[in-house]
Amino acid sequence: MEKVLILGSGPAGLTAAIYCARADLSPLLIDGPQPGGQLTITTEVENFPGFPEGINGPELMERMRKQAEKFGTKFIFDNVSKVELKEKPFKVYLENSEEIIETKSIIIATGASARFLGLPEEKELLGHGVSACATCDGFFFKGKEVAVVGGGDTALEEANFLTKFATRVYVIHRRDKLRASKAMQMLAFSNSKISFIWDSIVEKILGNKITGVEGIVLKNLKTVEKSTLNIQGLFVAIGHNPNTEIFKGQIEMDEKGYILTKNGTHTSVEGVFAAGDVQDRKYRQAITAAGNGCMAAIDCQHYLENLIKNT
Ligand code: FAD
Ligand code: NAP
Image 1 (cartoon, protein in one colour):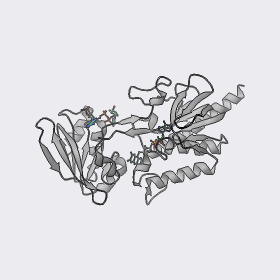
Image 2 (cartoon, helix red, strand yellow):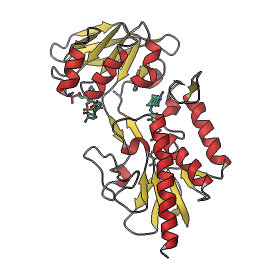
Image 3 (cartoon, rainbow, N blue to C red):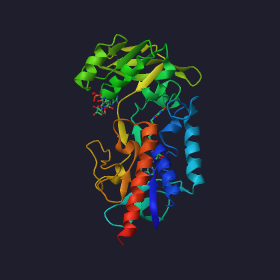
Image 4 (cartoon, protein in one colour):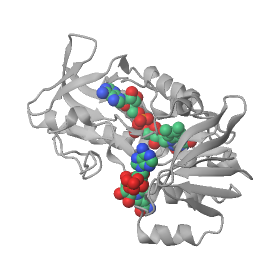
């Protein structure tokens, strides 16, 4: 039986693995469908402390992985398909194996996935002008014109942030009313660098991997008219989905499916901890996920120590 099973290999999962391994807990980590997590789909990461020149996302994750390996973390390249958390030991099922893993504790670090528009060019141009994170990529658009898609708080927050760099920020919303809070709306309406394009959706992204984004084709949903907007950056801010489908009904979550934590990283199930974007609808940064991973490992270590004391 495992002492601790870590689900996910993003900054939260790998940091938890480093701490658990150094605490002699011999962690086993399941990589999941995106080994290395969300940062593997970006280029330059400039805000992770310790890298003043910036670091390539995949390289940062490779370094974290090596550090976790160095202290003895074992990895399984598979996805978790099902968990049983109602009885102890917990049982975890894998997608591509008959093996059922039994474990005394679990650290859930399955992250969240940014929702995208579903356009074919979107994937190709991700990291080449298309982004889902203004905090991460805004700096690359100094002196350029960009667009943000979405009408919620995230879209307006991203738009406001982007005006620090871009000369013009277009907010493209599919309706004529914003979903964002009034305070956020007032901030955006009073920012002279932000222009709104209402009742419109992005139909096509123009450009390629070499030129980057060169523009977008918009469709007005009321008039059905199409138009081209010349921009160099497209930020998709239409929400995130936490990767928590497999835990539904077994662990407490909020109405959006984010796992609820208390006293650090404890979940509603004793012995199950959650770290990173899977339980964080606010900050969603690599450094906060890594910090959470550290907390989950320490919480888990204390839990296992108490288990031994009480048996
Ligand atoms: P994730 O990185 O999302 O990792 C989740 C892990 O869970 C993955 O390894 C996945 O395979 C695994 N998983 C999912 N489902 C299962 C399953 N069923 N079974 C097993 N494993 C599973 N933040 C910054 O601080 N700076 C940046 O510059 C930056 N740039 C970004 C650029 C982009 C394009 C994106 C999308 C995000 C960016 N972020 C950035 C945000 C940052 O990537 C996330 O906040 C961070 O990766 C969250 O870490 P995490 O470990 O919680 O989850
Ligand atoms: P959200 O509130 O769900 O808003 C998503 C926006 O994207 C909506 O305007 C929605 O349009 C639009 N949208 C969704 N799918 C789309 C599609 N396929 N094409 C075009 N547009 C699409 O998500 P969020 O803005 O990420 O916010 C999530 C939560 O975090 C909210 O509770 C928010 O208040 C909170 N948050 C708070 C702050 C803050 O307080 N500083 C900052 C960020 C986020 P419709 O409006 O038409 O549905």
